[in-house]
Length: 172
Length: 351
Image (cartoon, rainbow over all chains, first blue to last red; front, side, top):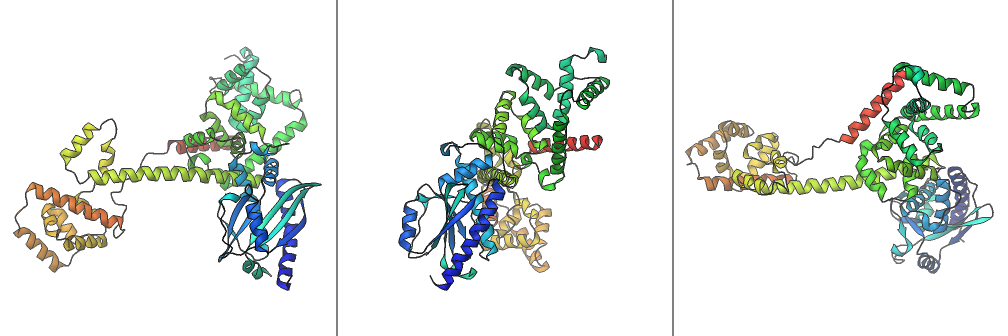
């Protein structure tokens, strides 16, 4: 790992810590991010895209590039359940409107944390499913971070961030 | 009425009506816990929503008795009372927040909310109710069918939003979604009416009247007629716009014919935007010309209106003049405003 990527990775470790604190505060249950994984190989990113048809992708925009905050369905269900104050929530029983809203909120908290690292991102307000998304690796390149969110000992799923390397270099 | 004649149920109605008037969400929390048959509850609710007249002394007597019962903890324990007090303080703080005072129903009419909510999941309905202020929830509950109230209360009770900031964001999302739907539908309707205006305004009075008679059940042309553009309406435009219109008419060699069609007064007013020399020349040229026959006149009229509309569409002149606009007042907004005003008055009196 080059020194720049090393800095970017370290920044994401800090970001993960702030993100888990923010989520715990906002949703009223303790959650932590125990692992941050980093990928830059385009094959790995492509396979993630093809294997995530039910994930919720929130497109984020910077001046010259775009990024994605990606949330698995189970993670969204968990946060929806906490927002509604329910003891249990079946994934099939949560309306799309609410799921997309929660995905946007989780993405907005990420934007807030990225802002602390001088990475300015904006959400368009749209949420896409993995099947709707088209990324041309010849035009856009991404680096991928996966933050593994856990509540007590239960794994809630990985929040994935796809972001352009150029954008991250600014923060380093 | 003699105070001794008040039955227990009447006292209950007086007390609950008072709570309903003061804090509708607190009222529904109490109402929902009443262990009564659903029909009885519905009847009770309709009486509370529209209570019959009670003498002031009766109301005072019932409320004083209730206060006494509260003070002696025969009805509610001190712990619950202090909780209610806290809730009331919080609710007053919410009302004091200017952002919270903007009514959700003045932004989107109640009918549209009801249509939207019909298609939504229980959780969305519950969150919607939680996002309402006391005044809004009172207005909402008084706007829906009595039979629907228990369902909405059940939706309300199903969820307990954990994150107030997230709830506010959800409220904004719902408003945004419904405002977009409303405005796009309204825009489409306005656009259709404007197109109709532009088709009808070039026709002569008899034809418009004949269409109006034939289509009396399907469209009301009288609503569109005020937006019909006429030759004399050129005076509604600014001086700069009038110059643009005259230049365009001259370019299409329609100016002289038009000037002939106008009244002396309007003709002079329009030419005011021209130089004295040019004005004199144009007036002289017009006076020399023979008046055209009626078929030529209606053709010039149509061409003139067409040119003005084209200039409006390309925004070379003010596009708003004689443009169709729906002027139907928003009754729901005024209703909410009147309720808000009434609530303010009640609060003032109470304080």
